[in-house]
Length: 468
Length: 137
Image (cartoon, rainbow over all chains, first blue to last red; front, side):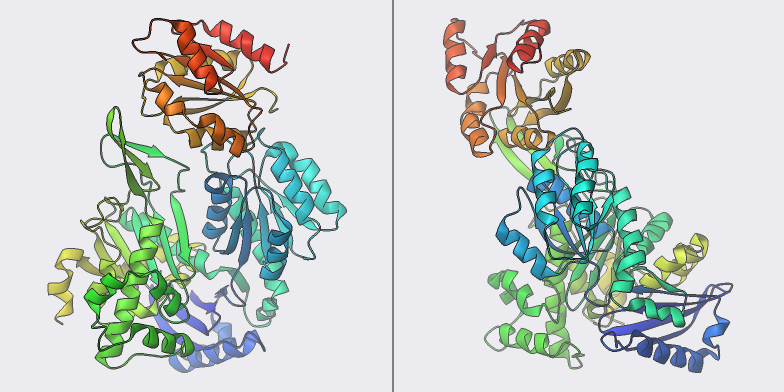
């Protein structure tokens, strides 16, 4: 059986061709995306190139599916009640479904909020708030306000179950498309996002692809089956099936994605786990941390003193260089100075994104002595660290970039993996493995085993790989 | 629902869980919807839970002798969060070394608690008061 899996991105349309019986890649191609004109142009170019490489026509492939992050990705606005409870749970649900969270709102929406939501042009709005049997005021008032928005998009209600009928009625009376699902936080402190995730994907398949004009691909292939970030997340689940609890970092030009498949319970005695628990399969995205479009916003959050440890700022002006990169997003570094600068940016993007993904420990001094509170997941014992994304795959200064994702004694309460094995998606194929995992999980495992390169233990990494 | 929802927890750095378990059990048996936020809970934990759960009462437990310190500013924060009308109880070992209960009671009433319970209070008494204060009977 042969499979051709595409990723229709906002800059490139990529294709990976597999012979699944042999468990191998038989061709790879990419072409600049043409979403604004006709999504099928890029697709056809990739198909032609694959044919040139393999001799196989598109009709020879039994499986031909695509993922998509085109047209801005799956843009979601999440609304909850208390910022670190239902609002956070709604945000986590949206991210884990492969969405791009434009903004999160809590408590009662104001006129300014509503205007902002309209101008953000989301693809989906998720409304939550209240535990089951809990708060009624906020979900109701926010539903009423949202139903007046001049937006013709799907709304999801995932809040206090007692209000389902009323809220459905409110949206229906305003001729809005409303979907009702399970509460993201049915009980205090309990996160429940599986059902919302499934619903988001259904809506993505049924409405969003059509609304973005992407269903045209059906003239050539079976269709778009999921948002690209979800495909990458699914590939990590397969990866974790083989190797155990894992952390994935995807450094990009605009954003840096971090995913983990791990429980994250405290690994140290006497630590109290507080706050809303993270899901076992968790995705977070830093929308302003990347090495091209987001190079300047990345520099803004980097500590200047720390930057000086990496760069001779008397000779190099980082702001100027970053500005150049934001204007030349297709820039491919060739000489060592540019490669090194890219690696510095990637290091900070990784460092900060992983810092925000993993849990942390807060030390509290009390009359009873010192207490340790853990918020989020403790990933110190996680043994597998998987990297993907062009800025890392094609940069020789890998160890420096990877360091950003590893536990540091300088920040002992940031719970990153302490001594992980390093893996690199050097073929850049994780998205396609995610798609294949839904067809045949064992095949997906084989491909990961074969193509995701094991670089060895982090601390032995330099000696083994950097010299070569 | 919501009518009978109460938030229950042990405030501050206190880890005494037994009293909380008993209260949780008897309140549920008496028909209350209990949101038990557990030990080591901060004022903010109580407030956030009460908002999401739409609770009508907060029951604070404290056994280790630092309740007064832990509860300072609680009422003000509740007002800030729009929960100025919530019923607020506290019980446990509230006045270490103080012999006169009425003094202890006054101190906590000044801190904004509607009812203050000394050690060895029977849960039935709390249930009775709660039903009365919430207008359930």
